[in-house]
Length: 93
Picture 1 (cartoon, rainbow, N blue to C red):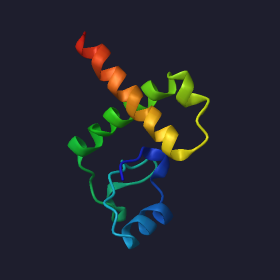
Picture 2: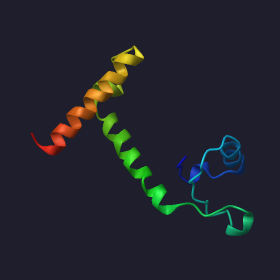
Picture 3: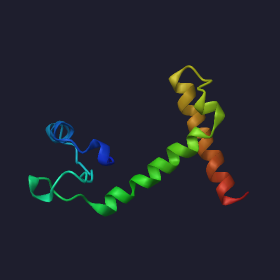
Picture 4: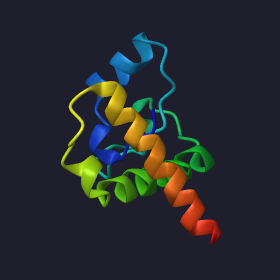
């Protein structure tokens, strides 16, 4: 799980550890390096940006944002169509 500093709490970190989820969360400024926390993988954390940009782009698609499709299978199909259209428009017909 890659999260921002808002998720840097011992309770959250221990829950993720108990569930064998790899944690990539930077420390808050009030947390010191000597309190037992390990350094996070910077390269892996930077990949989080790609996901956030994707979600931001999807929020611009009105049909998805207002969720016209009530059935989950139709909603996921519209997400696929949005990605196909997005890739096609970014490549340039």
